[in-house]
Image (cartoon, rainbow, N blue to C red):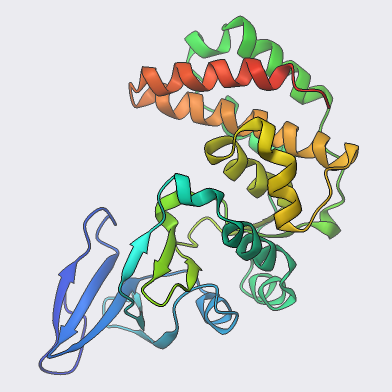
Length: 261
């Protein structure tokens, strides 16, 4: 692919990014290049949520190419996801008025509770559809949809995998890969992170670092989204033939079903 860069630049694909992310290198200069990045990357850069945006341009193929500052560092480990800085950064995302305005400007979509359920039901294998625990949880979720008004939805990342958190050599934490950005109940983001990385007994402590008190209303919303996210993960792992992880999530779903709301 021709990136239409100045002479002297070499471009190398970054493994695992489905031909969308690249490193540009010229002498001692480096850039992080991406095709068709989220259109509100400029706002993320201004808020220092992502590494600094240097330029954006449209190339002859019709793709949009962005260049960001190349930072040496590491993605977070699963254990590091428990750091208070992770909770602090996610709270900044959810509370940013600039991100809210910019995502609205570029046509960001709202994802409601029923959309999560519909996503789960789409192409649901019969093995999971008739699983007693999962069928019972699904019916429970259908009857207890969270009632947070859409007007209170915030910018949510939607894919808080530990590999999307970058800690630079200067100890600056960033959240990258915003392809799943949407307006949603912030509890949907919070539950993604809690289910994957935080022991159930520590959920309240994590929420304190995030800046919230575990009220009954918040706990109800977080647990609802935790259950639907677990159902979605179970379905995904079923299709990937990752049955060990799937069974681990089914066990946690059972544990969560007994969690006092």
